[in-house]
Structure formats: C-alpha cells, structure tokens
Amino acid sequence: MGTEPTRLEAGQVIDGFRLDERLHQGGMANLWSVTALNEPTDMPLVMKVPRIKGGEDPATIVGFEVERMIMPRLSGSHVPRFVARGDFTRQPYIVMERIGGDTLRPRLLQAPLPVDEIARVGASVAQALHALHSQHVVHLDVKPSNIMFRESGEAVLVDFGLSRHDQLPDLLEEEFTLPMGTAPYMSPEQVQFVRTDPRSDLFALGVMLYHLATGERPFGQPTTVVGLRKRLYTDPMPPRASRPDLPAWFQEVVLHCLEVDPDSRYQTAAQLAFDLQNPDQVALTGRAAKLIKAGPITTFGRWFKALGAEPKSDITATSQIDRSPIIMVAIGLKSSPLELQQKLLTTVGRILQIEPKARLACVSIMKTNRVGMDKLTDDAGNSLHVQQLVAIKHWARPLQQSLKMEDQRLTFHVLEAPDTAAAIVEFATRNQVDHIVMGARGNSALRRYLGSVSAQVVAEAGCSVTVVRVLPF
Image: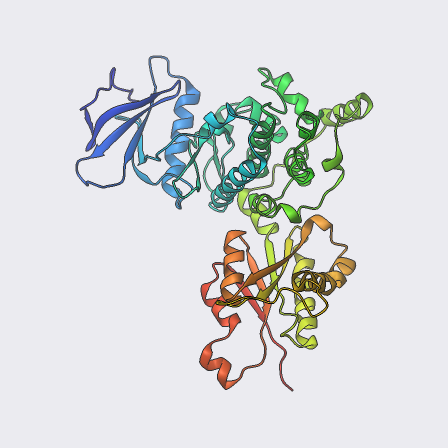
C-alpha cells in the first residue's frame, strides 16, 4: 500500500490536478483547492487527501476508502459533485466540487437562534438527508461541521467516511467493534452497533435543532461508551424548560426526533421536513408539554429494559423510505360530484391500509384571481378559507374512524392560488410527496381542448399520481 507524499506543496500536480492552496488541515485529511489541467472547468474544485503517516491509523484508511466508494454513486444538489479519485497504490485522493461558504458550525456559537431560522435550517437539512437516504446511504455522522449551504439555501452534506451504503460492503462494521460516530450526535442504535437505520440521522438532526434553540447539547459530550449508553434510558431536559419562549410545536418536533426507539421517531427525513415547513399542522402530544425529565423510577425501568434490548438491524435506508411515504390527496369539494368524492375517499383508504406508516396530507385549492380583488368571505361575513378547511376535515373523518389514524399522520391544507394544477405540483415538490391521489371529472370536448388539471399534474409532478374517475354506465 502506498503512502502520502512526505509533503504536499502548492504547485504540485497530481494526476492532472494542480494544488493551488491548502484550505484546511485536519486530523484525518487535508483539503486543497485545485485546478483541473487536463479537462478545465469553471466549477471550483477541492481535493481531499487523507493524512497518512508511518503506522497508519486504520480508521483513517478505512473511512477514506468508504468515502471513495460512496461518492461516485451520489448525485444531486445536496452533495458535492464527484470529479475524480486516486487509490492507495499511488496517491489516495478525492476531487469534488468545492462548496462556497462556511459550515453550520459557526451558527452554534450564536445560539440560541430564532425559531423561524432554526426551522428553515432544519427543513433544508432534512430535505438533504431524504435525498441521501433515497440513494441508499445513511450518513451516520450528521453534525454542524458536515453541513454546508449553497447560495440557494439548499443544504449540502459532506464527509461520508462513516457512512453506510445499502448496496456496498460495510468496511467499518467489518473492521471495528466500537461505536462509530461523533459522541454528542450518535443515536442509541449506533451506540448498540447498528449502522443501517436512516432514522439515526434524524436523531442527530434533533440534537442539532435542540442545540441551536437552547445553546446546549441534550446529552452533553460523553467520552466513554458508558457515557454514550446513558442515552438509551435517560431523557434530555425538555428545551422549553431552559427557553420558555419556544413554541410547543417546536419542542414536539425536537423530542420526537430524540426518542430512544427509532419506531417512535419520525420515520423519514421527508416527514420531519414536512412538519418543520408546516408548523401549524404539528399535532401536539405529551412531549410538547413536558418541562422536567423523567423521574428516577421511570429512568431505572428504562435502564433495566435497555440491558437486554436488541436493536433492529434489518432496517435500511431504502426499505424505510418505501414503507413510510407521504401521500397527498387533492380534493375539489365544490367542483366534484359526491360520487367522485366518495370514490376518492375509498381509494385513499385502500392505499393507507397497505401503507400503515404513511403520512396523509389532505389538500384543497381555493382559486384566486390573477388580477383584481378576491372575495374572502361569504355574504354573512364568514371566512371562505375556514369553510373549505372544515369541509376537507369533514371529508376525511371516515378515514380517521375506519383506520384509527393518529393525528400525527394526518394534516389539512387549503391553498390559495390562481392555478390549481400548479399549486398541487408546487405543494408536492416542496413537501417531498411520494404519491398524489386526485379526482378527475368526466371528459368533454372543451376539457380535452384546454387540458385538464389532472393531466397537467400527471405531466409535471415528480412523483406517482393516481387519477380517480367515476366511470359512466
């Protein structure tokens, strides 16, 4: 196995990449800004080179090999664009897109931050995690220094040295027997050597949300395995206990992320992003009202239970997303006949029966004028928006009763927009909806000529669309 050159210097050329400036010298790797000489590009580039000396640190070597395997398989705006790699036989390196700006880490020094800003940052990171999990990868080292932001506000995840790819060998699990991660952010299942569950990344994001809101870490900064294991049975102090101005919905979201049992957390990053983007729709439970930790008797019971607990190890990033979709039903109550509304209800009910972990967003569009004033109340002065909201809740009541749906799985939205199809597609895109269900009225010559709402949604939506019709007899 080759080793790193004794000294890397500006101006040195490695496989057609000229080292321009050393940007960072870390314990595990050095980062250099580089210029591609063989295939010039306007995209700024960075080269990551592992720090390997005599008596190599196995974790450095294996972690870098993991990142070298995973990065070429990733795409999209939430990860740096991969360019090239070199192996250990000559010179190990990874060349990738250089993301401008700083990481999230400096923002911790300014905590506590305004809740709106924390929610915006959290939603962006959750969307990035969903994109990563959709590509079969669990990050397993989500922390502020591994999160950057594009000028658009999109979060970018970096450093995949501890990550796990569903379809690749897990070299870290094969080589090491101690928990791998950064202590303050590690999930309980990581402490128990489980590296396959994407909900571990949601736990870490919950730790960051807590820290940004209170200026404190919920589980401190343990330095031993014994200290790490305490999070299997002890509660964090509820964030509103130290910052009473935090809204109840925010504490609900954070403590939902920090549940010990992954099955009790948000099931996907998309579901977490949905709540952070729609705080008025967050259903409050006992988590929102807590102001103290659990007492010693409860804590002892959890400790005793944790002694023999066997965490689930059959979960993967892919399987967890597949079993926990976000479903959107678009309901046109005023324009749809009762028969179509009933068939739409039946169709959604069937889908939810086979998707017990799904979230359902019931959406209705209140059309507004492109130009001019809109009528917002009826003749009696009652809000038309509220009336439509009440109507879709009434429409969904049989679903809640027949499926015994929890409030946290069901949300209601009235969107005011001049273009119904565009509003549906925009909502689905912004909230990472997996499946749209909507009704379509009977065909007519005029509708075929002008184009229907359902046809436009089918053409433009980036997810599955089911169109429900009432067949003529």
